[in-house]
Image 1 (tube, helix red, strand yellow):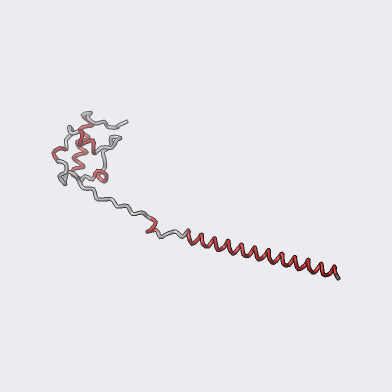
Image 2 (cartoon, rainbow, N blue to C red):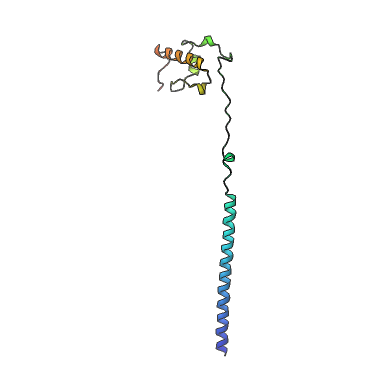
Length: 126
């Protein structure tokens, strides 16, 4: 009988060990699932409108129309003024960057081209 008791106790211990192992596995799997859920909740992507940064560009106003610069100073000999409206590479600045109106942009472009032909300005700056 003592052998039967020992076998029964060993069987009980094995069952208890298996149950605790299963419990620990289920508990750890539940904990992992909860952590994954929390990470997913934290990683929720904000709405597209919140994600984008809104940039505000102030409307550029023609300096010649607002009388900040004299319109009569647009001349191929006035290199200081003309160089303001050219890029470092020698290209003419577009209206959207310089802020000139169409009329004054045409005048400036014409004078820059004249200065280039007379070799006062380079065609390309290398």
